[in-house]
Length: 348
Image (cartoon, rainbow, N blue to C red):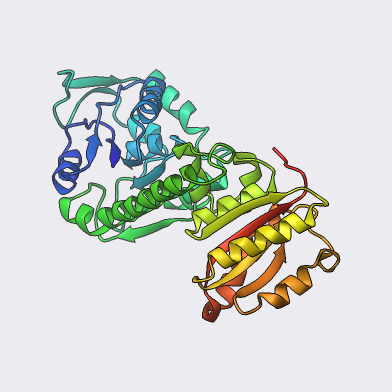
């Protein structure tokens, strides 16, 4: 996993926290750059690094937490985030020394009123216009004994995920091990699940039509399948199929044009017989799937009732979760395979 660590004010990429992370996560790649003192230069550098290196996880401490929450499109852990670092800086006007050695060899920097103004300007756009997806991808840790920074209330106005830990402002190796590593490992599990979803999609009949880009799949996963139409397409059949793949069901895909009902029934029968060794099935019809009785669905359902669980109409994306709920509602009839049939003309 690729992890970006963002240090705080007067610190550097060689800080003790960065070294702790490298020691505790020897199999991961830890990026820990020295931040430029100019805020916009620092932010642009971080955005570029996240994009170019395809960072999986961002950890920001203190001022680094402020920068981290501005990096959209990745999972973020904010530790004692200083959302208004300019206030602290105004108390430190003049020449200040870095706590740890920087790669560029610079040992001190100057805080001016103008520099504080530029940080304050950046702070005014924090947490603005962020999507629900971004809020879901952000978690904060607050030290109970932190007497340096306290931005918990402001954080909670915009985000919901946080917890407190018995510690102060600076991260210790013990705190990282007990409270940060479990979050990282949880994120690792998610990344593995996303990779598995990507593999299932890549080998599916709609691999070229649905989506195969890992970044988009991650967004879909993190968003808990909200706004699928915006991220993928508007075709409910494709979206239902994607939803099944994401939940690790076996999804059999077929599409039949209007009026060709005999072909449809034959295809259904073929798929059911071929997969009859599995558990019960759920047949999902989408797009113009109305009046089942006229085309023989009732008789078909009765004929194969010994292993066909039911038929659900899924004419729009709002009903996809209803389809999923069938499996959850009847655990004794575990559904292993979804047979997804599109009745109607192909939609892009």
